[in-house]
Length: 143
Image (cartoon, rainbow, N blue to C red; front, side, top):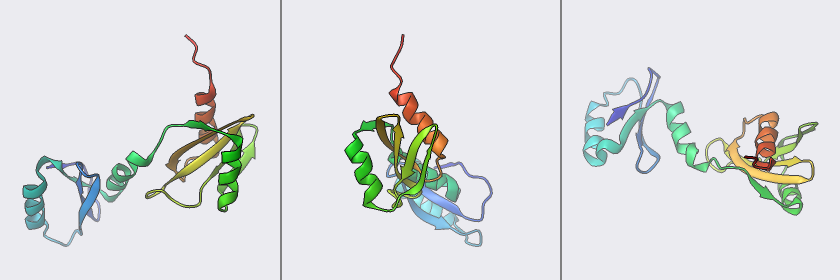
């Protein structure tokens, strides 16, 4: 069992093998007995984290790399649900799906010139960062 948390109001007991929070201990609880029982069951896969750290670990597998899509897919996703954070400027155009995949993770769609891309990341990812990532993906590899 490892600990990787600062002093917070709650401690999340997280299993790195399953990438799930398996229990939450409030500061007023005596969690020693519960932690010992879980440590016997999960062994070294048991980690104590702050709620923020647990959420970040839970979300991490859902964050994806940029991939190119067609114009039709871009417009289909733009019109399927009301877009969140829809912006157009000199950097490009981006929007996020209003539904979440997991935690704070959602699908993000970007247009740079006449090319279109998608990836999954946090809803809070700024428009400029979305456009930068897509533009980098579209850059030819030079050696």
